[in-house]
Image (tube, rainbow, N blue to C red; front, side, top):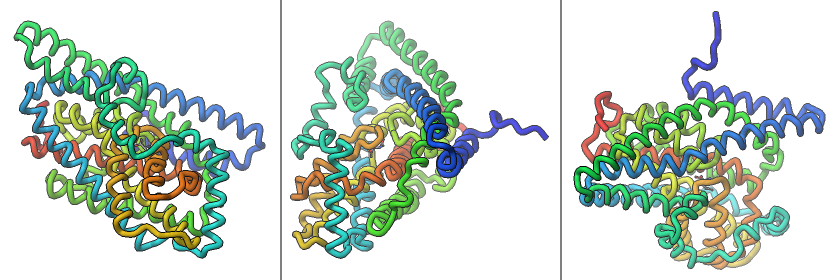
Length: 439
Ligand code: ASP
């Protein structure tokens, strides 16, 4: 019997790539001589970077082409307004539900309710880590006034500059939505030239995406092996381990219960079917820890496998990858409350209910501004900590687990985007997962 991995379904290929990364990162690399291990790691880093670059290269042209071609078919005013409202509603509610789960679990489990000695040691270590890792320079100068930045970023003064900066995709999205909407007001002869151009550009971008996506398994090995090789499994003890588990449990609860209910009640879709169909997207989000880098695959998969129309995908998914961050919002809330519990354990003041609600609100708002790239939520956490009277250096407490939890929260961020696309498609009269959906 011949085994040909190229013919396996993509999710199996990615799954085996992850297994291979696990064996390489946790067993083979640690048993090699340091110089040989460094060589293998260098090759992995190269492959991972190459793959991330290839994915990122697709993002701007894909977003622009798919949003413009999607929105221009929505009809100039009514369609865009209605869909924006629903999308906004879904994003706010799913984010709020995620944060509430985090809030409840971190209060019930209380990973930071340790004795005062442990808390002092952890917090002391945190400041050193924050300094050593240069975390403070990354997050310094951030405060709650950064929230207004989100609105400013929606209208960048220079669209080329916004397109060139990974963190400014929101501006590119606003521009593309407006551009697509205004194609609708052109006279028929000019409109045809525009619709033909953008429709065909989108097809080219999707074909190109399809091609690059074939290399996901190689990218996964390159990206995940070094992470697992350096993963601080040995340091996952006590309070940090409990914090890690609290985040994981909350993320799983949100995916299974909250998003599962949204799929079943609003999308009229079997959550298990959706989860299974989205596996390649989820595994890629997990491996890259970046919603933006996963976006090309998300668009292609939701369109092809869930039968959501091109225009709904084009409208909801790029926006979702940039502003809908359930996992991130939940994570921000748990981190801030965990740090607050540690401070309370050292005998300093604990957060009262009002302050906890402020954390919830800030987590929801700042998660909108978090870029879909690895470790981006640290900046948002640095906005929330001083707002509730906690020092920014405490962010170092969660640094050692950040990458692993980043992979997990990004998976939830992206899954929620796909659920949003299905729910909104259903509300627009489409039949997700029915074989005969027209775009
Ligand atoms: N890495 C996350 C994402 O891309 C953002 C974050 O929480 O840091 O979705």
